Image (cartoon, rainbow over the protein chains, first blue to last red):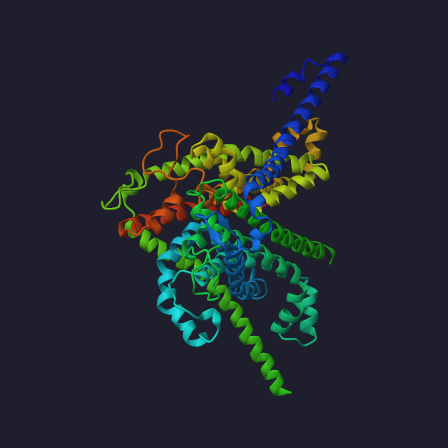
Length: 325
Length: 283
């Protein structure tokens, strides 16, 4: 701002040179400032990985890779194994996706193929608001409504119809894997719907028209032509939702039952990586216990890193394909 | 042949109807959440909620004044730490970015954005809480700012790159230096989008509870400074909802209603700003 005021007197040769020098200096300073901030993002992320790595040294030295497969979790005897938590995290997320993928994909098809522009945008906005709801609110609603519902009628109904399957046996407490999965499925709707809808909408018009011209019904053109065309983007949305579900903490902690063991029944109480960190980190003491929890955080970090990476690659591929056609 | 066509037509109608049902289902979930929260929260919300401190379980009444102020403090600190970093990172990526380094920064932003919030909580506990030997609002603010940075950086970069390069070139042709062109032409042209990104980011972190569990913790009373354990609305909801006391459940509902209203209002406001702005061009 000051430089325009100083621009007037500099008509002499040396003045101009001085001025241009100073202005070039300004550019360099601005460049340097933004560069430093950008670099700080790199540093923080690197620090995050390093701190998790060093913080978990004690547990890594003691348990090695056996940590991932050991089912034992006993803070009193300093025995720690991640298997029950890995199991709970993966099972709740996968079951959640089994519910949210069909429903989300259906909704995405409706929004991209059937609803007119204005309606589609409005409904998508409402769905995306769902992603803005804080997870602790999902957790609270689940505690007060879903847990009693699960105990009173969802659980008994599933048992009477599908009770011959081992996953639907045993007592229904209300809390447990299935309750957590239901909450997660609702929380992953927005990711599946908005990304899949984008992918479906980027399918060229000609694809649909060609199918319709050959006599396909609207559904046949959608299911056999449009959806396969957009499959990479849809897969991307599923992986994105998977990563979100794996890392979800509060809502799961509140409904999963916090039992560090593995159960076949989805009605049983379980635990997840994020939930065990949230519920026991504050009281963890001794040399090994906190370090084991930090190691769990590291495992969770790499798990979501891989799944997120796959999601990004898939979404990148579709946007490039869309640009080409 | 007709039977086959009948089947195809039937399947067509059935499946298309089902997709509509799916859309209706997901939308109705949001309205069910909203309706139930307004119903239960509305019953429990009163003036005391905003002005009084929490009481111990036996007593009726009380409020969450300290949690409201605490949340504002923590989120405010997060904005002070996070917005400059995110903004300047976005400016760097959009205006200067080299190839390899920018790719790295962008990748790290995505990575940071995907890190589960509980892992960020652990990280800040190791980095800040353990050396300071106390839970504090500052630690909570740092944890939330780590979630804010990638959101702001990404939206800033996005909206800056949407500014037509003719505007940049015009400013440069008039003799402005690069930083002046950015500061007085490019950034103002994209200001609506950038502001929206910041509002959405702040709304997102305001509802976060997992990163605060081991950073700002909780407090039944007023925190006497930024280096004290500090109450926050999301964590209050967590502790209250899991408590066995009916009166505390009522408080949780009220807090949920207040929190969700703030988050939704911010989201809707951001959307309105953007839609009124239309293109990122000035005017």
